[in-house]
Length: 338
Image (cartoon, rainbow, N blue to C red):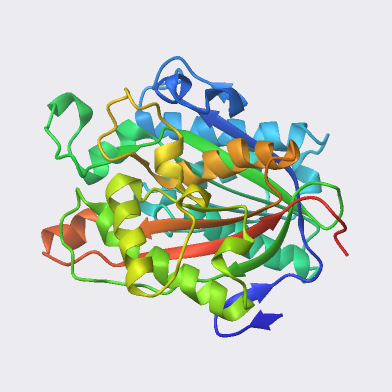
């Protein structure tokens, strides 16, 4: 059912029956290391390129997710997934491995919640009973495409962010007792004219606020109705900018209930500049750390707002500004689904 202008309400409440997260060596030193299913000791994962390693990350997350509930690829109707690398190569090749009907998505770092929203819509409307969705990124692969190869040793400003090496996958089903998806607000592209690719948090903040406002308007909810609202990789700069925008727009928010995935994944002494980022950033925090907290009873309702900067090397070279987007998904746990 459509609420307002841009929010889907899922009356059948699709269940996140299983989820898995995989991380790299840097993530193994972070705040939420205990919430990963698998942590690797090196960035190569036994492969001869970082892009191939990224594919392996995603394959592992897919396999773990289905194994947890004793399912095989024959039980899955659809896979929805994306990453940052050109033409979605890592997830395309992972989809070749798993061999189920596949829809590739690109929403930059908003891809995880774009996928979750679409997967929930498929299950809610009974077009599929078991749908996998996820996202993956690799620090060295992303640096090579969007910045400079790691080996180059390029210096970065304090506004830059650190791409997460990881993968997060969730399995949505029409039955079960896990956390369930209640609604999703699809964001619009917002471009405030920023051009600095090393300040994506600042560029994405207006899109995050725009989507949160749209969600509250469509659902008639108050911002404090949620135990937690978590944005995707705004980092320090973007989070501060979004808080200023909330004040400007007359919205009062409890800062303790407003967090960012890019600030939750790494320790303070890890040199990640303004925080974490990447397609996997929201995926590993939500599908690992936050779902675990929900299952422990620490959180009953969260609004996950994954943000994405829709730039490319080509758009930057042609001196374009940075269009941004954010998608919000409401997840609840506890009480009756009906």
